[in-house]
Length: 448
Image 1 (tube, rainbow, N blue to C red):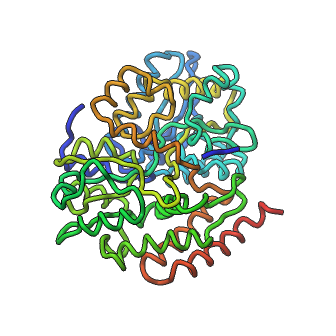
Image 2: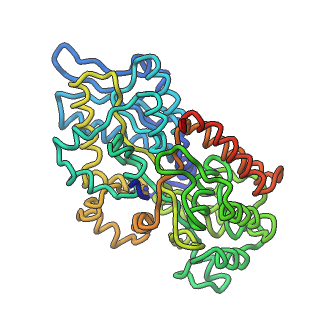
Image 3: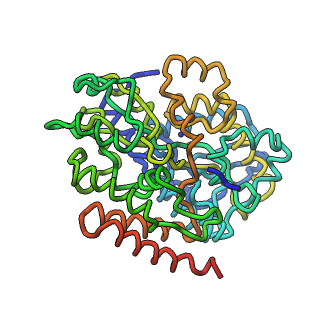
């Protein structure tokens, strides 16, 4: 069963960090896929001296300085492993990365290792592009290694009893709220909204001229945000085998209606399209008192907020819930055994508990391994900054992000339907019914 992310930066630099959970900015360092020779040739080559070169494709989900962090981690690996040279290639957003990997696979020049959305599992399986990692896991820790990753993150990593990717930059959606604004309107800053009714009530109190009560991005990752509401009100949007979707249930219509009502009925959220990257900017500038966003922005908010803020579970309906999000490490078919062994060594290095802890501290992503939270550096960080555990603790109520066969088309169908409702072109029930019908057609070949 597959069950269900210390220097102060200036606000200007902070704005570069907030491109979201699956979008990226130009890299600060490293090569760019499509411009460097390693991007054109795909897999690296073994040099005459016996050194094994690996091409490593990666996106940066929250942009800017994080390229330096990833490149720095690769550089440290190269220093510790002189027989291997990892060549990091920044490949843009998650979507850009998937497109470039698909092109490289079709051209028979896949990267040796890559970070890609965990939800691309079925896309890669449909292309026969990736290899299962179970043999590597068995030789290097076995269940002790695999079971150290949070089950909610492994849900998008496995299919039919096999593990195809290893969690890395992983997240959940969390509620950020301005404690100063709470105090201003007489709300207890230590008691964020616990359910949908309180979300509306709090947002109504917090709203004033120049400040929204709450902002939830409607562009970029609308389906991810919608999935949170759906999970809170019922069950997940897809079957565990990725062959069926459940978009037009009465519970999902109710969930989408709530999202619309926040803007149009309760007037606590701006109407129309709200861009993914705009929401954290608005929060930091005091233009909204609460926001739904990825925990991958936690360090950005911590470094740039000029007010006291809190982080909380998303408000519940029938229960607390959030979909997981973010990227995993994949290895690809068509690479020689020596490179696969070296790539696995790199994956193990990047996901070591100490390194996972530091990655979480540097970025705000959830450290994907349980043992990372037992390291001294993470214990100290959590003691000084308790908000760092919220997204991790929410994993108890998390489920796998929307992932199906023909994933790109199915996700686009849902996103298009959501956008039609958000922009006032259709009603929730009609839009979800249409999305269900179109998605079933897209999935029909996989249900024969």
